[in-house]
Each structure stands twice: as structure tokens, then as C-alpha cells.
Length: 116
Image (cartoon, rainbow, N blue to C red; front, top):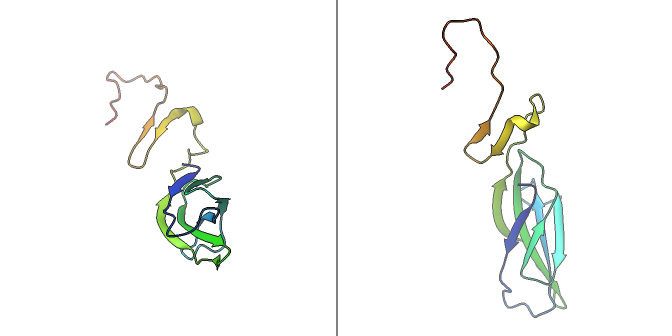
């Protein structure tokens, strides 16, 4: 996950309201690590770093002023591929599992090595 998507309701805001969607490593959303502004009721923030907890929020700005940020929750980005190993060895990285492949090293033992 290097970006996050979110949607929100208009909450009685008029058409043309500008919404700012932010991602921050701080629960108070300050400073934002990434943000975007739109008149739509959905958005995406790019550039999120691996192995990081992000907090998300949205505010609204129109002729009446700018609202406080409404919290949208938090999420953790996926782990980065370890730099010390061949990046091709990790073919799938998920929240609860990963797939790793490697070449067998020839051995002189009579029995093959078994990995569990």
C-alpha cells in the first residue's frame, strides 16, 4: 500500500465545497504526510511509506469557513521488501503472510534438507 483511498458524506455541505483529505503519521493529523483537495466526496493520497501507521482525516471549506478535520481512521502500510535480500525473492507481501522463494544450495549430506 503506497496510497490510500477514502470517501465521505457531504454532511449538508453545498456543491462546490472543497474537501481536503490528509494522511499523517500523527493522530492529530499535523503535519500531513500527504494530502489532496477536491470537490468530490472521495479522494486518494499518494506517497505513503512502508512500515508506517497513518491517520486519515478530511475537512471542508466553503463560504461559511473551514471545518475541523473529521477523523477517518488509521491504517498501517505493508512491510517493505528487505533490502539485504534479492527483491525478486519476495513475490507476495500481505498483512498476515508473505511468499519467499530461493535457490537450493547443493549439499553433501545423504538426506535432503526439509524446510517447514
